[in-house]
Image (tube, rainbow, N blue to C red; front, side, top):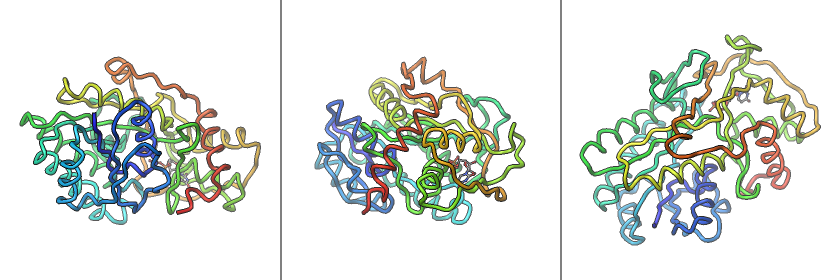
Length: 328
Ligand code: UDP
């Protein structure tokens, strides 16, 4: 099967690409490198420097490589930024995905795996979210992901699209034997930021809000290893020929507060560093954890690295081996 991986030079997309290549799929990465890294694309995958806004290039690529399925990871992802630039988020995440889906329809490619997010749910009631839980995003990032899910839903009803929407919680860790890690610029994600503080690359780690209605007052998230996410995507891809719609939550089902993650990094790294309490960041729900039993039952997905210390160990290793990230 020939798979086009949009955003395959990014953090999750590059890990997906590595898993596809390892499993014998012909893999073509399509990425504009605005956020991704050319060096993160493993040998064995073809690389196309292209933008999702470029409909003609998408059609040309799908035709040239006789693409059978598309996996889509190319998106803006920072919640804080999504509150400052909603129009940019809808353009990148919704309009460009519309472009991609139209190119797929034109080329008669009908298998699509979409990187959605737990942010589609909005506020959770301190219990694990199921796929049927109410969807009411509280930031434009989550709303842009939900809009794409709706677009896929209605397109699937025409009979011209089989899709899987993977709603993952907090992707983290490093995959492909710790060679593919998290390197965003500017970095805004909790675990890489704490690791940078532990490495002495920043003065401190800031906690965004300690007055949430959670046990220690800081936000609770469900951290899931990036390679486990990629495996779930692969399982969904393999079911696409026979299933019109698949929607799955992907998480470990256990929440960790910001303070607990900081403690875990201190434990794993053996380093101490300064922790500063700041005001809340706009758009953050207090508590997000996944009930992933549907993915476990229907896809046979079992996370291989569910514990937070092992996840952080892999990230710690990658950051120490790549102190300046991919340096590109
Ligand atoms: N966070 C924090 N300090 C930081 C970065 C993040 O306290 O420097 C918090 C953030 O407010 C959220 C959690 O850590 O509650 C996870 O944030 P991240 O941006 O990693 O992922 P998100 O949950 O927004 O997808």
